[in-house]
Image (cartoon, rainbow, N blue to C red; front, side):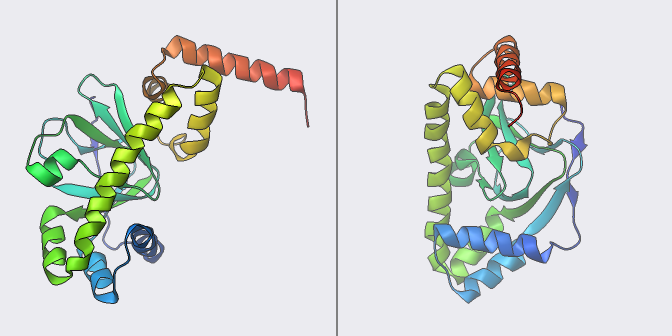
Length: 214
């Protein structure tokens, strides 16, 4: 996956983005005000104005990112889609975060995607000062593992059903990439060919036309 653009660091994270970051993390694991202040202090905001490389394949990933808006797609070296992360989710590569192993996929942020980055060094500092946040990252990694199960369940469904599920679950992705790349991402994620995806969309349009206006 060749991506020419890189993210731009924002001078100051928007207050509503910071609040979203804290509130979503609290849904995973409660923490006190001291931990909240450490998390707010340690987060760094980035904006992807165009599709941008967040992390390349083969490098050790010692950072994680909370997605405020837009989406991040994980691509295998073959350019097949691994996972998609949308607003409210944390992008993490457990192999690098836990074991200093090289990443087996690249991370690409879609256009107009905003993320808050937490480095492993910041995590270590926060964990030292506020040990109650340590289980939080265990739950972030566990939730990432759950995404594999949900993807597997989705891709096992018949074509029309899994396309409908995808469009519902990943609605934030539809303005994040060029039309050509967008279609490739959907087809790869659902384990179907681009031609099969085109047929599904054609059948969907035909069905809507037959149904007529509501």
